[in-house]
Image (cartoon, rainbow, N blue to C red; front, top):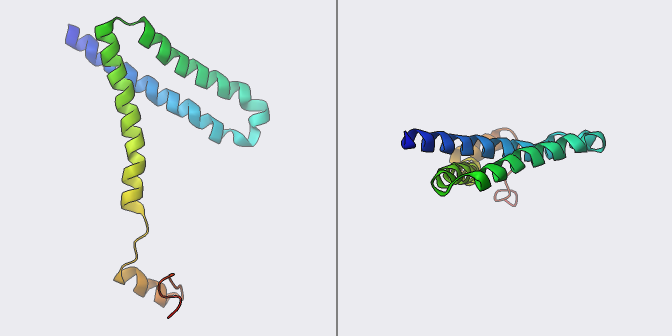
Length: 114
C-alpha cells in the first residue's frame, strides 16, 4: 500500500507542477488584456503554486520526497525540452538547403559574398 501512495503522490507532484507552469504561461497568454486580467493571472499563480508548496509542507517526510520527485522531475523534463528543441531544430546549412535556397533566390550569409 505504501508504494501505491508514493506513486499517487509522485503523480500529484507532476500534475501540480504542470498546472503551476501553465499558470505562469497565463502572463504571456493574457498579456493583451493584462490590465483587466491581472487578478486572474495572479490567482492562478498563487493558487497552483501555493497548493504545491502547501502540500509539500503538510506531507510527512516519506510522502514529501515522492511528491517533490514528481515536481522536480516534471520541471527537469520541461526545461530539458528547450535543450532538445534547440539542438534538433536549429537551422543547419547543408548541401540540400543551399541548393534549395539558390533555386528560390535566397542567399545564405556564407554565400552572400560569392
